[in-house]
Length: 130
Image 1 (tube, rainbow, N blue to C red):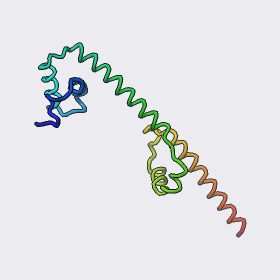
Image 2: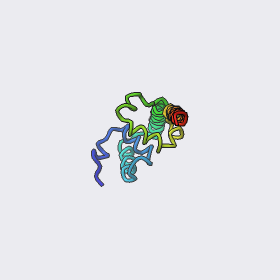
Image 3: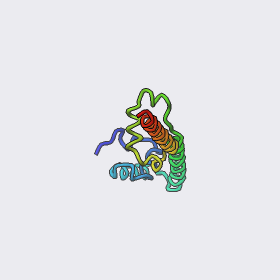
């Protein structure tokens, strides 16, 4: 199988990444990367060090993404210009908190509370007029 760019032409760090994280790559690419690392005489010790660095980098990247998701929120502009999208998301996405969208989950709770209160007030006012 031909890869673009070919495995043999890739940087050593990229080959180490391919060989170190086989679940993210085509098995044939992993084998070719390992063979190319052997052909380049890259020591297993160097590969382990690079793997540790890559692993820390990936963990930090995940932490930053999770923090971004946790702080993501609805803006008042979303309610004005994308109300249908916001309402569909609020009504259909019950796993916001589990998916890491902590702030959006809180906003949804407050929004539903306000809607229920407004409906109750309107109902009471209509009953009083009748």
